[in-house]
Image (cartoon, rainbow, N blue to C red; front, side, top):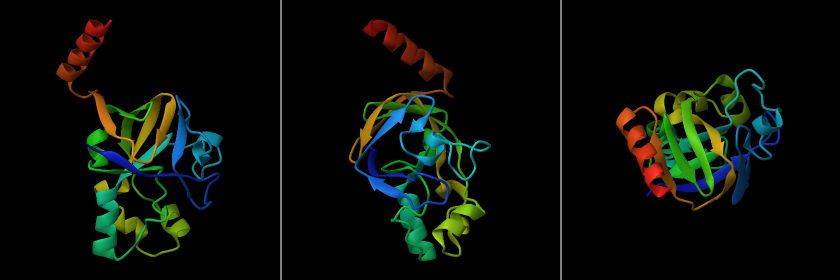
Length: 172
């Protein structure tokens, strides 16, 4: 079962990431206290992700192959998950804790990530699927380190969506 290993926010663009044990996700807003929730992110308001996720396996690969340790949050992503490649969550609704998210797009690294990390090669190391994804908060709720990540429904599979609708109808 995929689980959350780390939670991060930054109060403003370029500020160091702060580690949390718990966070509050706000529907159509993001993570309470994070730079993009507050409108103070480096790319606000033009290129905003409500929430960003990265796989712990991607960070391990960066450490092993590029000798760059980003475990201190310099990857600039909000949620680090074990047991799943986050690109598999695109076009998918998933639950972490009490909150529901929807994977919306890839979040490739940029020159700003490398500048803030203050280490040459970070952007190159995080390219391709290692850069993580963006997600929107669909249902508000709290989440914490150790929470399971469970798929609610796949939005790109019409049969799965129909099955999910039928299941919700049966529950009522």
